[in-house]
Length: 638
Image (cartoon, rainbow, N blue to C red; front, side, top):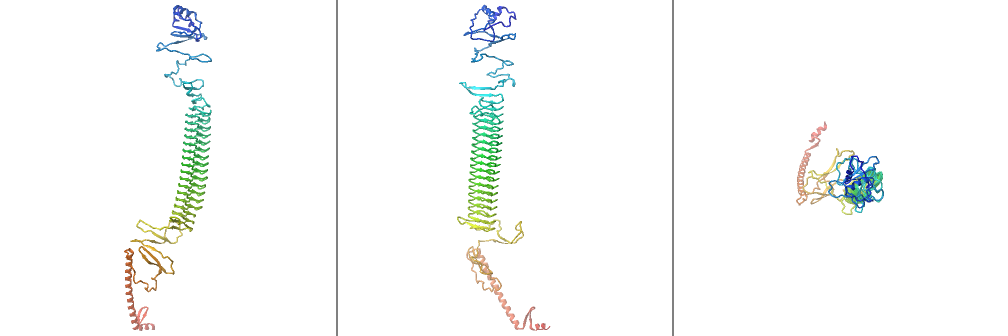
């Protein structure tokens, strides 16, 4: 070590005093060499004094020797005409021995510099610092160079790191393309340089092989594997999963997770909540796929939704289309505002607007059947241009071409034929309408081939029926009941002709039949043949219990009746029925009538006897009564 005086003899110390001071203080230039040989210092006052006087400009060298002192004072070289010193001093209260080891710098300039910042000892300590000033004190760099914090493993490899870049971005490593301004990239593993958060204000929260393109501002990938947000896809979000993509210029898009889901170019404001292999095609705004697998919303189908399920498709240009779920359901191109709620393999064909298919299996609404509806069931079909038609359910029911406003409520294999507008089949099996405004409520095997007809066929098996008359009501193989539970019997009414429109009935007259209060059932059986001549009336030919059989007979109440056809007796039923009672009353009335007729005949005979006597007396009948023959002659003479 090269030592010299410090600042000359400014304080007037004696040579002895200066020699004594060298026992506790050594002065030297700032350069310390460890490759020389230091003479062993003698522990005598005289030798030390001489050493302090004669080694002023000499370097102090030592090798394998200890150099002991309370203080080590180092001078600068005085190049600024002022000699300044650095004092190295051990703490007076050391609790143990301390070894300060200077590390090997390797090749290059073998020089170290100990520095202090403004304000004193500004080092960051392992145990923490106190008295720091936010905004003034910091851990970092001042030369626009990134700051890297590392955790190294035992082998020296970097186990974890964090890099604060000069452009405000934060990353875990420096590999790959430059991170975007103020971006955060917390992933390490990648197999392409583009798999970084390159967009301004972007965020990759973790995972591996994820990438945000340079012009995808404010976009986020939460984690996962191999997810990508392309250029221009501002404010896009991929929550996680793998192989999910938000394509070019698809802004404000969200893919929550799942696998191989894609929002196409320009698919702004679209959402895929999860699932796998979903695709919202390019230029499709505000579209949504809720989940499931292999669902597709086609290009330009704005505001369309697939809630879930598997293999469901909304075609191109189908605005506001909806598939709730199920599997293999399809709404074709330009079928705007149409809906399939669920089911399997149902389809609404192209250019069919506002159609609805609730569910079921293999149900179809064909092209041009706008506003048509199939509620469910299986293999039901609304044919082309059958607008506003509806099939409620059932199986294999068909509304044929252009049968507008037609309805099949349910059942099986029912058909409303082409152009049979406004016709309705309520249900049943194998019913058929080939006319407009006709109705079959149910039953089986009835065909109405004319307009404005109504029919029901009670057909247990193969007794099919065809009606080709218009404006008729048919009840086949069925009894017609007019029932009531209001205390008033129902009527069959026959109205007179009427040609006015509006409320009905008004003042029109009618003929009606209704049942009186009954004590028993009466069943009338009509004659098996038509009348043979005019004037014949219905007559009772036999009564057998409740069954009254009618026949055609002559009306004996007409003029000229001589009473010869009046029966001498009427056999009354003896079964104790109400008919028996009424027949007995009728027999009594006939007996009384017979007695009256006999009395009248006797009175007529009496009058005839008196007339014969008057004639014998010369009486003459006149308009004024009976007069004598003389009075008649006088009146004639006058």
